[in-house]
Image (cartoon, rainbow, N blue to C red; front, side, top):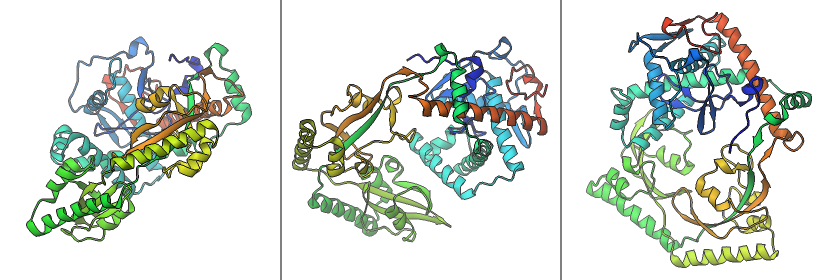
Length: 490
């Protein structure tokens, strides 16, 4: 769908922070607003490049220095290699770098450092424990994607994981400080109804934004019942593994590789490093991790993910490294048939009018997160009930795309995060067709846009003021860059 742009004066309202390019070259996404001195803006999962003046096209630098200083912002030094890493990471994430100049990337990096610099000046503090947890999750994800620590170290051209972790920690800390600084700038900004009205009617009618088709969706979920026999079988298998390791010296790591159903850790021998008491893991999992001594293996225990055994590999102060094996019970064909018969009966009751979808979800659905809301699903990206059909998961979109308001889908076979089979019904509780912005119908969304524009104006003013106060030096190689923000102090 082609989107209408507003006008050059109102372009600010569409600008959001696209990617925070860290000094390590690892790209982090932040949900904060900044005026874009680089001309690069993010619209969810695509990158748009604004028209640049002729002086800010991709620039060929004759005097490129591998470790030359590109700019200094306060106490932060930006190297030419930081810009190079930015290009590499954009390519690694599938983002086109065509038309993205070194000037643009440098401008974005300088913005990031200006926020972090001012956060320190204003004594904004961030707890190391928070950054530790963020870094641990980041490393676990990276290791999971690349396969093992050796590949991670090679990919990021570090000598060891400790060096990479230190760099990630520092980059994440600066990143978080910058985000907190930006939030402090805008936290008290509000818009009045009159400001919203003036904002909307200042946009020429032909240039008012087009809102895409959106829908609100409810679901009913039926889980095939797991028999006690299947549960006992899983517990028995886990106990056999435990005994084989303790009594015969078998490798716990090998057991995890061969049998664990946890895709995030199985290929690493079930390993989770740096688990803390406040880590975002199941309570029963953490309880076991912090109740065992090194080398001990737990008895089988259950979480929402399935059944586990766990061993503590190393205790490091308030952190532990653990390995685990996850298995979940098999579901019999009889249980699947019974669940299918149940959900078909529910569907027939809804269609015949014996019960509403809302009532059926509250009465029958096995999904704890949605059943008390009549099955209403929350959009995990926006934290409201609306889903943009063009930005939904393709599989999910295909299941509901042709439903009209009040329609009930056929029974859909799905799987939860553990791979367990589920049976589902969907209904569209509300449909909002694609339309040009309407002041009355779309007031809340227009209000958000008006607030965003006001926040961006305030941040732009803040940037101008702080650039005048801070020590900023830009290498002469970049003196011809057409920065929108006054980095050159001209």
